[in-house]
Image 1 (cartoon, rainbow, N blue to C red):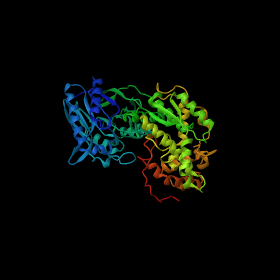
Image 2: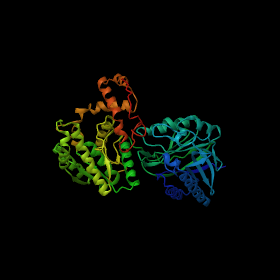
Image 3: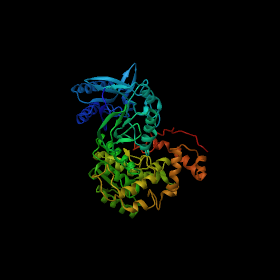
Image 4: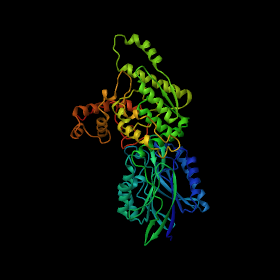
Length: 553
């Protein structure tokens, strides 16, 4: 019976559905982990996470079995054993499992017990829950392997402890959310460690997958609640953790403890990583976006440059007769600071053509929101034309405050393939812009400029869509410092109008915002995907019926 172990933690990215590429990558990481007894990979690393209905394809399950056997055969060389996340089919259902590969064979399989079915997760649609798992006997050491959600409740880890587990290793696919670091470390891992008296190695992946971003931030917590290892956030990392048995208790020896990003640096890096992986994984040559001289498009452009480099970002100003000189000047300066390609395509000819085309039908009716929206849609068509012709993905620039209340034009400024601000309230946009003007994100180092990315006036001037003369956002909406807390209460906290009135907001204002939130659902259903940042994003977390007569007042 051994009293020393070397366990390698592979905090790595994934390629959704490319099982051969994922298997090849795991073998490369295993080759780098020579000297380890065991190398551990994140949840469902062989498939990708979350696989959604892709995992229901029998051909994928067949290929997963083949690749798992291929990986197992590689362990016949006497090198590190592998703990691999995959899917298996048995008795007509699918299981989310980890498999121990050692000495050329698949020696042990353990299934996930607790299947999350809330927010971004719908695993009960895909998998059957496994039985309460027994520990895995590895080199004479009983290792409990609770998979992701299994550590968010006490049942699996308590059972593993009762069955004699000595170490807990938890492979995860845990997406980024604001303030999640503390919940993982203290509320979840710390609680399970206190309950069981066992050390726990928490392994998470990194990278973007559609709207989700995985931030890594893996760690090892000893039984005394001390953190022996803290891996970085946002980047791949391989660490060989050293374990020794002292007085009958396994202990991970102290190693590197990386400092995790505070807010709002973590939010900014989530945007950068999400966009980078989405664009690169879908093989776009770059992105194109409308640069209006406003804060939303300026921040979106900055994120794009930090994610992809200036040479892959194309900014286009599309002025109308309502575009101010300040906006023209600010857009030029943003483009200069970022070093991107910048073109000006006036929309006046198209506006005139539409006026002439629709004039006979509109005759006798005063100009209204219709004419404003036509400008936005002309801009959307222009940008989509550039996207189609040159292949760049159109990056939309709307924020969560606007999308919440429908202050966006469907088939206009909502047109595009991805949005980095989709889950960022307007007040967060201001915070991120100030932060980025004063800092360089760790993920963007070397890609974007080290100094400011937008003129200060972009941050300080009153926001405006500039679709009519002297227009300001607060003509139609409450000031964002009032609007955003109301929206947070309605969306993230599911509060009623009366609940928010009790917090000091005006009843008429809250009732109006609630109505706008509900009636804009049809727009959000047609919006592009975007980086999930908070606890309830539109699309994956908050799913409301479009036709809906319910109101809380």
